[in-house]
Amino acid sequence: MAAVAIRTGLIVVAVAGLAACSPGRPASPQPSAATTRAAVATASAPATSVTAEPTDSGGRLGPAPFIRSLWFVDRTHGFAATGTGISATADGGRTWVRVLDHPSIVQIAFVDPRHGWAVGKEQLFRTSDSGRLWRAAGEPQDPLTSVAFVSADQGWGTTNSGSVAVSADGGEHWAAQPTPGPVGSICFTGRAHGWAGGPGRVMATRDGGRHWSLAYRLPSVAEPDQGADVRCRGGSVWAFFRGSGAVSKLDYTLVRHSLGNARWTVLAHGWGFAPEAELPGAPGVPGLGDYAGPFSVLGSRVAVVLSRCVACAPTRLGLVVIDTTRRWSGDWITALDGTEADENTPPTFVDRFHGWVVASRADEGSVIAATRDGGVTWALLPTPPS
Image 1: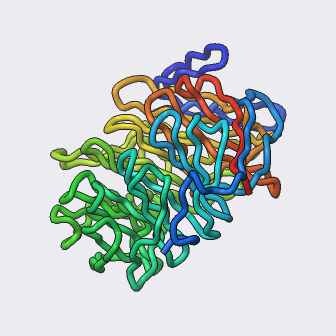
Image 2 (image 1 turned 90 degrees about the vertical axis):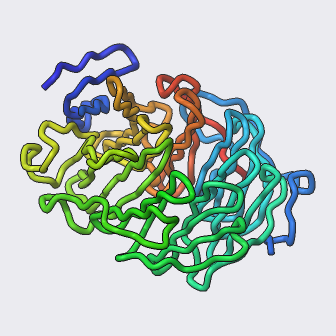
């Protein structure tokens, strides 16, 4: 294996396995290879906000609800969904104000700074003014669980039953689109090309979802029921398969595909698979630690993945930056020591340097950490009002 160069506070990895982590010996992650109120405007939102300066060490700032979704549209403007609604920030997360009251928001997604959607239990909301006003949109007969829009009008969604629905008017009306199997996640690079993740496979469409075909299947040595979380960006699709785990370890594999390229590249895989050489087409592929995910895609060749050491005392979270054109880098997020990652709340980055991560402390609620230097240093931020 290639050597791992270690610098103070930052680990730079060429291609090597993630170091083992055990209590008393923390190791660094080393990747190798109708609205609720008809209409809710920020200006009319209740004076329920949290204000505090970020800090880079311990302690919880303000109330701490559990955050179910976090999305930033730029370096200052972001939205957080909790069990009571959506809160917004205009200063990078230093202060928050409630903009929508609804108890079951599970996903927030924007296609541009103005147009966004919030998926709730049997209710979809949309905004066309940067989140100042949220109003109820349409909902298919089979309720949505997530949405992925490529423009202010064109988008797709996954449903409770594992099917796909499509909308051509910003979510006001939906039509079902049959797929060869159950779908848990979906993404599109445009109005034609899209991918859907299911158990052990990725399906693709070239005609906007009217027809789907098998695009990638996990090798037989991998756990067959692993669901694929697919993310599209810049003409590329990434799929992260995660399965069951044991002994503080989790089965996972990360693959990437580019339009115009027939093959899928296995970027990383972890415990539970047969030895590396037995994973077809992926000899010597690196791992991301014992417990990897969730992840986000920053560009066609760059993604970030959370890596956890659940056997460490305290538990530790690390961020791995995967760049297919250069060395990968990773480091522990010390501000989040003792927390757990939320598998359904991926990191949110607006560029290579500015990003936010959500974690939780047992029954104490969520915490947010932010970085301005690509993950080298982190600061804790106030949580939205509960």
